[in-house]
Image 1 (cartoon, rainbow, N blue to C red):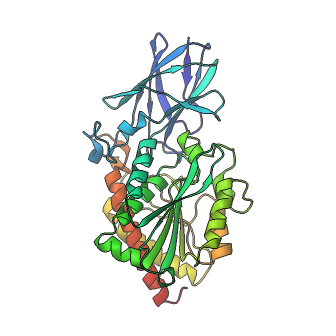
Image 2: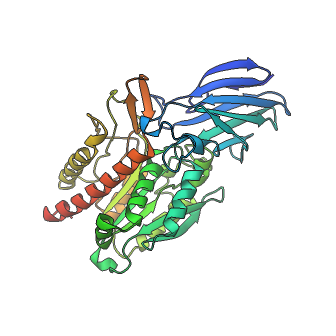
Image 3: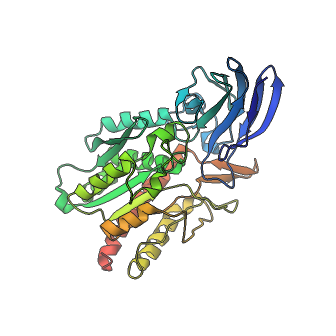
Length: 390
């Protein structure tokens, strides 16, 4: 007899039902109390047993419905079949092959190679999406791909430099953006995927921005933990707390990279998912306090106002809060670059009135928001110079 439990922190495995013959059905959901939206469960039995598992995926943004066979950055669900991993020790993971998706249910078998194992699925920014982004960036004349480090599991930590190479850096501002320090927090990679795709074609508005800015973007700071659905990281070291000690290869390498840039970045953005609960109609964007008191406090208020204006299309109510989970990256950026922001994006979900529950927003909405974020950065650069904030 094989047993599956849903009581693993941040696992979001609910409504477990035994159907007989080592066959279980369960669900995963958008939680109210955790930041990471992944499936994570513990399985116990006898070595050699096989678990037959059906997982009902959570509902999706209506913009994604009906696209289960052509996900191509439109729907999260089909890509999930390629992001199912098992492990005996929660450190070494192996991908499950031959999973199927039928009517928003993932169906697959888990062979037990020991008396207990773990199953992890990172649902909302998946390996196929990451690979598709890298293919798209490879054909752009405005993008330079750099491998700045390797994480503890051996995966590449990839940085994309996006700019117009014909304009000297002395005539441009430098912007730095990063995501997925907490590996299973999906807002960062999704937003930065959208930022990169918007900028990389270099057409019209994007082309003008690339003449004024040099964007340095790291969508996934901790790729080993992200692939395996481990929020805190493969090594057990939280990357978000490592910007003073530099125990991890990627924080050490990114520190060296940022300090070696020909100009200081004028804004540094670190994207997370947020903790707090939101009203049913709230899209949820939360901003961390600016580094210094006045005049940077005035700059913070202005940036918040602009972000709210840019994001209002997502929801009738965008919720702000002045504090968030402690960010050592924020302290690091203040110490070495003086002026800038780190901020969080709360869970990017919308309230589906018909279903009566939160659903994750589509890739199309992420891309719209990414464009708005770049607009806000551009607007803020102009205002901060006019008002003498920097």
